[in-house]
Length: 435
Image (tube, rainbow, N blue to C red):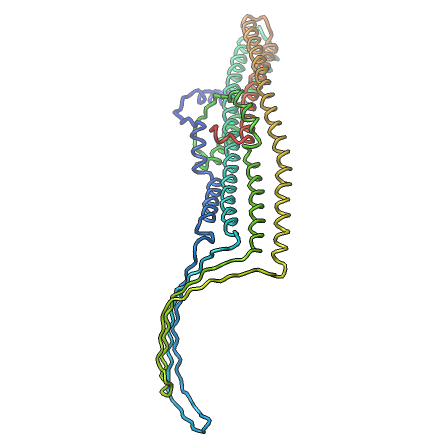
């Protein structure tokens, strides 16, 4: 066991030229590679195509048609005067081609509302993509700063293990000269083994967390790097501004607002179907017929020209479908308003809770900092007394545990505060802007 501990400490002291993964680099890799974001961007592209003028009724429709037919066979003719005749192997050829154009001049403003609806659907999809990016970034930073926390924790446990090894060597030396007991040696051995296991466990957890981070960035799972362990917090005044505008900037609330607008346009579009429509139609056509029947006075005919016209359609009654559609559209609009009002209270509650949690975590962080400084000072005094033989090995161990606990709590409090800040930024719609 001791050999393994020395090996771990030896390699942990070696300096490897690992790449430092900054938060900016992590965001860049995630935006470029994350599969959820890629899928959402493709959905946005589809929505953009649907909102194009090419997908509206503002442009005319143009169709070209043509046909060629031939009829061949025998013809038998019998007149009222009793004269009959039979013509064998006759044929009739017909050729036709035309270009038609239809343009809606008036459609009860339905295309206007449908076009506006397609634009709002695109805007909604943009917000949905933003929501996915925000959630992904929150997940990224949660794992990133957890990895930073574990990296610091690894160094804390490493230092603790080093102190335990020195303590064990010191107790063994004292035992040789009869200044210590076998119980103290065994106790120091147990404490060293405990610290060794804690150090081994943190290495395993750190490795697993690194893979989680690589998975979010969608890069090689075994990619090795270091992260920035320094933590900075946003300005308090800026935090208050984010809180005051939190509801209006919340992405989910903006999506619900778009739902209301889309439902309203849907209702207007359905109401427009009660109004008359006017269509302008035009065509250019060519037609030719060749008939080989000998008795037919006209056996070849052809025509070409332009025709135009206006169609006016006045809806009177369609069996009640429009009435049903209008009623359902009103209900959908009402449901959108209800859902928006319901979610508004929940979003406000979550923003306030995260804001208070964030401020409380910052306050606790200050307390943990003072507690750590006190424990550090106390341990320094115990360490000095222990070297002079004024305190026992067990008392020294207790001071060491107190320092370890205070340092781990400070480390945990630091990154908990950062993650609570990130959750707050996500809910107030500022996590993308700040990174």
